[in-house]
Length: 308
Image 1 (tube, rainbow, N blue to C red):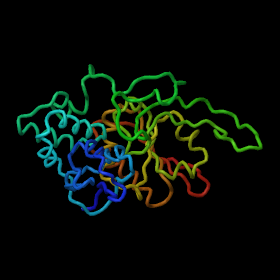
Image 2: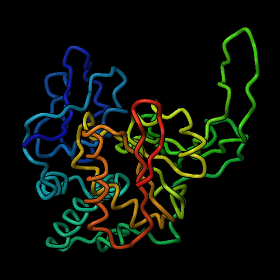
Image 3: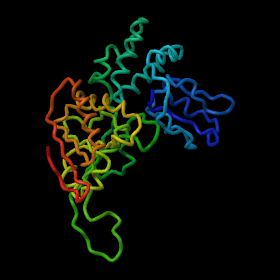
Image 4: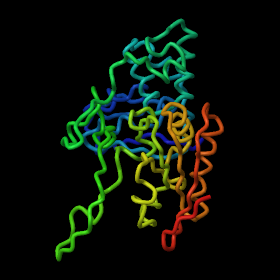
């Protein structure tokens, strides 16, 4: 089947082993001084190992590969102990992969193994309230580096954080190019790419959420004021993104677990962009809660908005 897996550039790889330690599924090993993918069915394609590579030798690609097998992963990492098993299940939960998470918990229960915090699939999706918060708070005017999750490791670009967008600023006339733009951004959280977001991040709780096709922000000059203001943002491209099979579970987790107030889907007026609406519809079809959903189509010529 065609799906997302990681690919290793052996010329860039120096065999440091960081990636193997960052792969909770045990799909990577250092063999003959190089990182090797020892089994495609062990690779979930989520790319947690990418942020561990200091040489940029690992990329995510879409190709014909063995289907990911969660039960085989459990068998493979079982000898490594409870800490590795827990890290693996948390990895799936944080990426919103509830189907694989349920399969992993079921496989462990069949062996008589129950991990704290992962007693059931429902329990894994909703950690106990007494659990320490994943994200630390910080003043809105604090430097960006102070807003970071506790115990975070991996690519800094995927570190979840929220911040104030600030009030719109008037355009300042100057002969020199403006470094900040004529108007303040309305973005209030990071990351925004659907592969990178944690659907259970606190800033999604009770929020109005905008799921936007990548091109909409470039086609619509009023994107920040008309669409993004007051909403949390998720972006994706239904045509060019790899690993789109992951998106349905992730959006479903976003709807079920965030308690979102509403969902707005922004797409372009080109046929391929309708795929994003179909992905959202598939996610909602299996969701356990209802919420208001609006769709807006952005014109590729002029950026006008048509609400459906």
